[in-house]
Image (cartoon, rainbow, N blue to C red; front, side, top):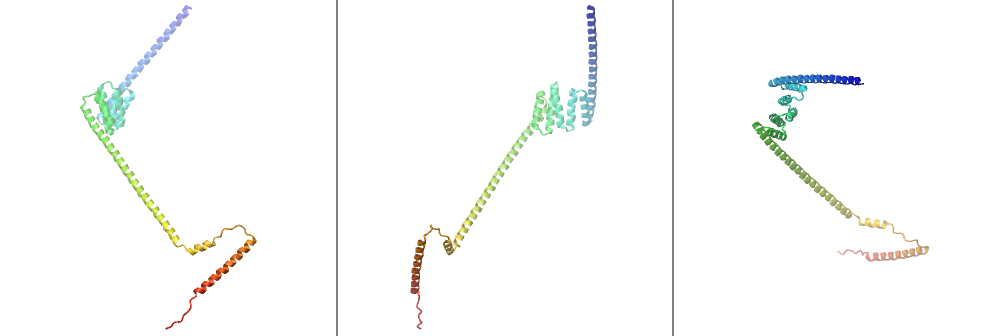
Length: 276
């Protein structure tokens, strides 16, 4: 039993030794690969620098990007890529490279340069507020940089001018809007006054028309119309009442006829002979 336990212990020790050997060799290989990649990255960086010095900024950018592919944490390649992009007028693409450098740089001088270049890129894009902020950050890391201080003063002046121009433009827009509103109000008022006048004229015309109609009315015609109107019906009469009414009307008609004859006799003129 003791012999069996001894054999198991030896076997475990052997497995452990083999594992350590494999791990060590893998680590050595990884280190060798890492060193090889770092060397490749440095070589590509040098190639990029040569192209940059010849003002071949596009080719230099490609070399720096390859360098970063071999070593993603290669700060020099990141910063130089930013410079190549900037020189090629790719200002927007340059800014993230400078920001990464400012974030990862270990010394204040490199941070100051990165912020300074961010300010320059922002100035090229006429983004004056971010430029002012970047130059201030640069001076915090390197207060003695006169070039950065000068650039900051220029950026602040341009920012102030931009704010004033925006204020003037806003005031002009507000004034134009007010003038337009006032003009529309006056226009609407004139239109309303015109409509009121037209309505009054139409009303006056209608009134005059009614008066003319009243003038042109024939009184006789109205009288005849009045006569033609059916009289309201009375309740039904008995035969006796009808007879009495007819006799009464007949007597009235006779009296009227006598009066008319008497008037005719009175008014008749006598024809006279002329005596010359």
